[in-house]
Length: 238
Image (cartoon, rainbow, N blue to C red):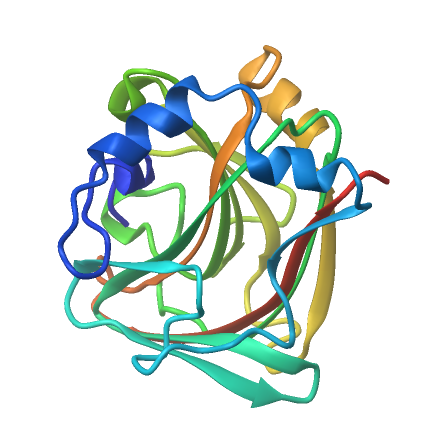
């Protein structure tokens, strides 16, 4: 797995630099998204009725190919449309810019299904840091590369469920293992986390505003194959 904080210094699909986005995300206070959310109980990041782009990337999202060629698609499933992610010794992220105060909408919900885990992977070991399904909440702080805080909710192959792990590649990324191992493979699960409380426990401070959400798959460290589906990502007040 690459340094996930670097999601702030890559390129958008099509080669446009993110530097202006970095500055805006790191310095913002109130945005149109945050204002709109005040009138709604939910902040949707990916909905089951999402429209897909011609290359499989959901509308409003951007693609980052960390290693190898991405294999992503928006597909119809038994729970509605979902993001399908595959990795063959590759590393891929999809991300979407959002802007709001996590204290006002602290609850993150999503659905996911893993059908293939990267063999031998373990988030606790740098040389085997691969996961089939990862959901990230990114809190930009300037300068973004070294100061941004990242929480990753993951389905790991080996690390025990509910483990809290600091990334072996960047100390500002903290993981919570939501599911572990092969139990439940091929089944949909709905997850729900209080991100505000998770942030305080993991970083010991009050969080800055959220600036981005990402989903990711990788099996480049283990050189294996992984497959997962992620759907219905949203934040709620309660």
